[in-house]
Length: 296
Image (tube, rainbow, N blue to C red; front, side):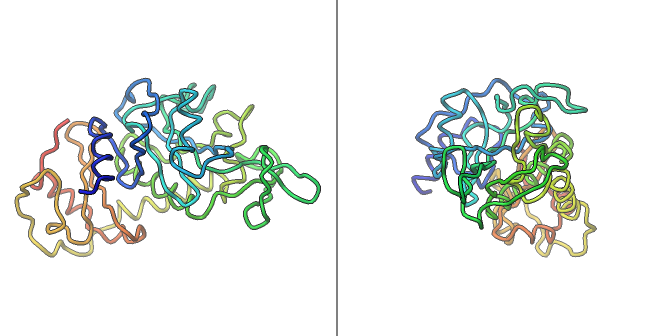
């Protein structure tokens, strides 16, 4: 185990839910949380942009939240997901907010995800700038018209392709880990739950939030509802460790997560996310109790 892996393990050893691909900054205090989610996991997520001037590193992306008592994950420009709190717990990130079916106050119901991005831009002469006067070149911005969650015509700094890919990947992981609790219909923009005061993600995301939710559902359904068309090649033997090893699942190296007692979920950590649909999910789930027992 490398020193970085050891630092990650030491910091998160008391956490119940950790995103396996997240960077966990070991030299920062945890984000401030207020308690555990009522059902053990969030019902959905809120998509934000930081509109921050100094979001290039894991540490700088967390500074504002730590100073102001907020709680959220961040996604850096290169797609790195930064986690600094237990995902079984909630903290403030949404402010005054409402949504049908969820009531008011979204912070204790939805995970906050801050994507490092300047957000809505203003024109200064012949250039477009962020509120902190960073000039955003043409290839990094887009003009969008009012519609759905986009409240006003305007120019926005784009989320990078890597950020959008990581956002999708994380949300599909949430839908898997929190199956039965996490609802992709509750992946909401801050501008949807607080339209009188917020404009994120607005045009920074490459599509409107309703289209984004549809995309997530299209990607999620084939992964977990597709019929089994091939068997597991190697018989499953009794595991000697708490986590199934690569010998049992040579292609996928699964990790086991749980949301409620007796509800187990497999999470594959892989290099090609699109290949997830190839895994034999029903067979893997059927064999789970033979592989390991996970205690709260």
